[in-house]
Length: 67
Image (cartoon, rainbow, N blue to C red; front, side, top):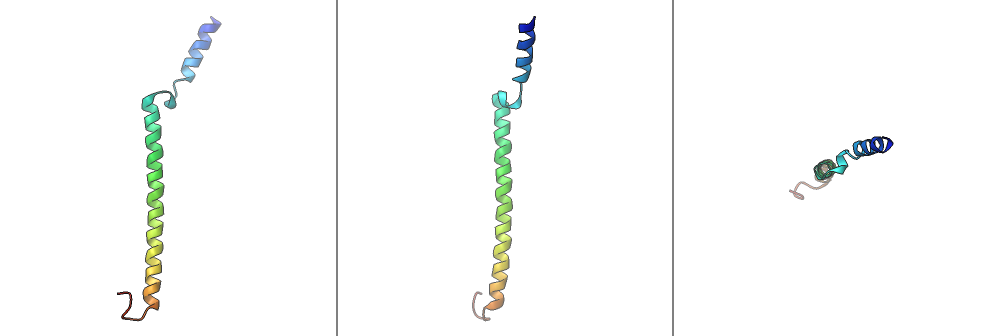
């Protein structure tokens, strides 16, 4: 009886998302999506910085330069 209870408890504990190929692929996809979102945020921050620097350069440059 104890062995049956232990087997049932272990089988329930092994039923997590990472225990099946489908669950592992969902976890992988979520991680990839998070990385894509992080890269998108970094890209937006870089774009904003470049715009700011470009505006500052245009303000410093003579009228006939950087057109």
